[in-house]
Amino acid sequence: MPDSTPKSRLVSAIRTKRSYLCVGLDPVPERIPAAAGTGVEGMERFCRDIVASTADHAVAFKPNLAFFEQYGSAGWAALERIVNAMPADCLVIADAKRGDIGSTATRYAEAFFNGLGAGAVTVAPYMGADSVLPFTAFTDHWTVLLALTSNPSAADFEYHGEPPLHEVVVERSQAWGSDANLMYVVGATRPGGLARVRDLAPDHFFLVPGVGAQGGNLEDVSAAGWNADCGLLVNSSRGILYASPGADYAEAARLAAASLHQGMRRILDEKNF
Image (cartoon, rainbow, N blue to C red; front, side):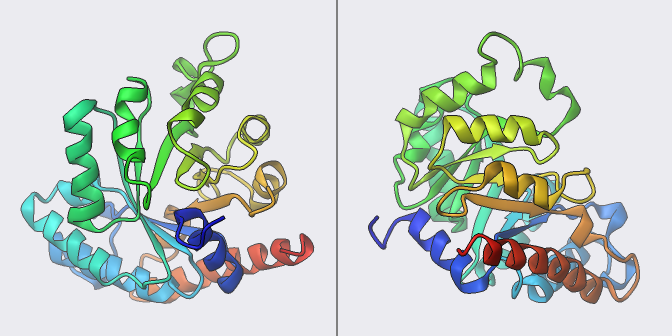
């Protein structure tokens, strides 16, 4: 595997940090501690403090764009500053869930990869290859495809059919990229489903939300989704961001991230990774 692929860089970071933690940046205005301030300035300070306090424990950060876009141009400018200040050894995943086609999708890819400077973006696949290929054409960046999500109403569509729709998505979409730059979102709250997706995509990385506040378990996720390259980015958002509502929010976030990191280090050691 060439040294310059997104996958090889991520595997190297996991080996170096002994972690496969992704910290989600979902700054809900009502939950940002008063000590961080208010409005877009408070949101930016809060996110910067979270990044600074958890960067030693994480290999990726996942800002959810909706929480920045709600502030208009000021929110986007804050997001740009937050991304520009990210540690170089951490992957930045723009959680945008874009799903358009053709030249529009290409412009989205340009916006996130070249404009914002993200290393990855989440993409909805339900318009087919036309909605994914413009992203995977950027071979030096990750396209993170929604596969089996952790929300309760995922069953409305993702489990329909035989085989289930999400399995069709995973099987067919592998032709639209490679395991070096195409990743799948697979929720932590369905470890059986995660194991099945691993059977279908043995060499791909999975971005796994839902550990912690949503009830997912690190050990179950690691057992179900592991592959020879680790193959997992386990995301925690609320459990880290809102570990404390007080002025000690950054230290509390650090401790929450460190706890997950400790569990990951133990699993990595057990698997001789």
